[in-house]
Length: 309
Ligand code: BYC
Image 1 (cartoon, rainbow, N blue to C red):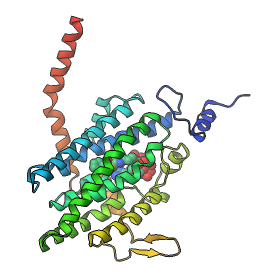
Image 2 (image 1 turned 30 degrees about the vertical axis):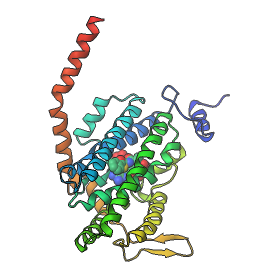
Image 3 (image 1 turned 90 degrees about the vertical axis):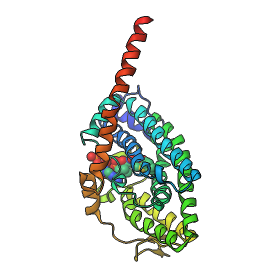
Image 4 (image 1 turned 120 degrees about the vertical axis):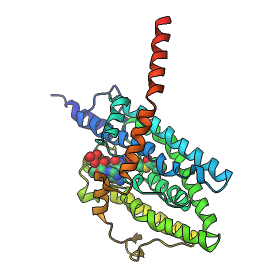
């Protein structure tokens, strides 16, 4: 007797053959991908808001142009990712509806406020740094359209991270006020960035299956550790510190040890109780409602055009 579809599917995954939209796939694989890719797309789109807050207050024309370009890249990533999710049989309207109704998640990190200009550097360096570590392995994820979308996204994200670091480097060599602003931004973003990688492995319900299907290549804790190792070195160049008294190089593990993460905070932010959750959702809903006339005009134009053909 031949092997069943599910076994054949797993064999393809094990042989590193990409799964394409029209291939057979288990329902749960499809749903996991729709969940992850749409959450990822929502994160890109909601992620434009904290930075958008500073466009009109950027300290120079150069910084403003850089920030605008970065935010536009994020819009592009969102659209790329929505398209990848659509190949799995969900419509863009459904995904928007899930975001606006609060059913779909987006990254916890974007529920924190951007209080000073230094936050733009800290987001670029730390948030995009965390995003890259998580996303580079996604270039090899088992679902073809997602993997291909991630290649360009990662190129742009790594550029974002460099500009964030450079921006903080300038502040770190500036006046006493600029140095203080730089340190305070790092202090505020550090712990929420560690939470971006998701709950610890023993409390992550999706990791085991997602790794078996090679959607995820590394666990949440593995990626978090890589991030700590990377940033603990880079911060030395800035001459700043990370707000963790327990951060220490461990000769035995050849990794940095770090302090305890406040998982209750992550839980609260995911549940909608973070400092800016309401503001972010209100902004997205408003953008959707304000854009209604554009969607109506585009549909009317398309309908008229199709009749003429
Ligand atoms: N925030 O079983 P787990 C960016 C949820 S970067 C909110 O470990 P999974 C950007 C999780 O969804 C950010 N929710 O889940 C950067 C799950 O709930 P559901 C976007 C979180 O999926 C700069 C539950 O907790 N990147 O876009 O195996 C500028 C249990 O977790 C979070 C991505 O989305 C969180 N931090 O692993 C602009 C990358 N963590 O869905 C934009 C792709 C966990 O079961 N996504 N949850 O109800 C992933 O790699 C994975 O989905 C995660 C979580 C590692 C995030």
